[in-house]
Length: 152
Image (cartoon, rainbow, N blue to C red; front, side, top):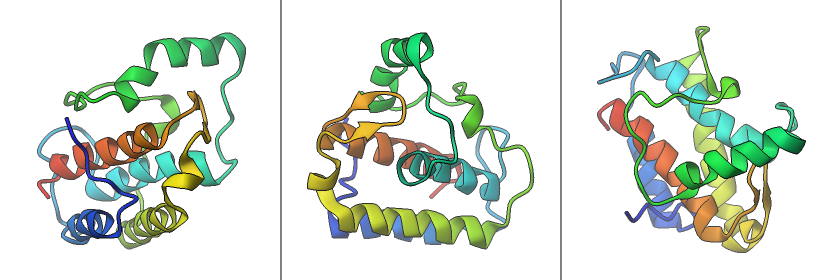
């Protein structure tokens, strides 16, 4: 499957427009998260890139993540509904919708401006070096999954 190229300004803006179509009252079509929690959940992907908030897996744990999760995350197949996620991605507390929305939009804009070359060969939190295509799939597939979850 082909994913939006979030390094392309036009396609990135199309994704931002989908995010902007969400409201605090937007309901999920499946899953347990409310819309603010979903936005916070999507922000974790970018926190792993731009912050040191989450500890990096090491040794055997990292090997197992690369072995079993990498292809699911950066591969071409869409995510299945209600798939289990890593503990750091679990958002169970209440979040502020507008704050999480603006953080996500800011991360998208920062990523797009840094561009493909910045990410080509860049180390991911758990998967090692990824190609530009793999980074884009990681970002775009995850966002698309959750935006579909909320009907936008």
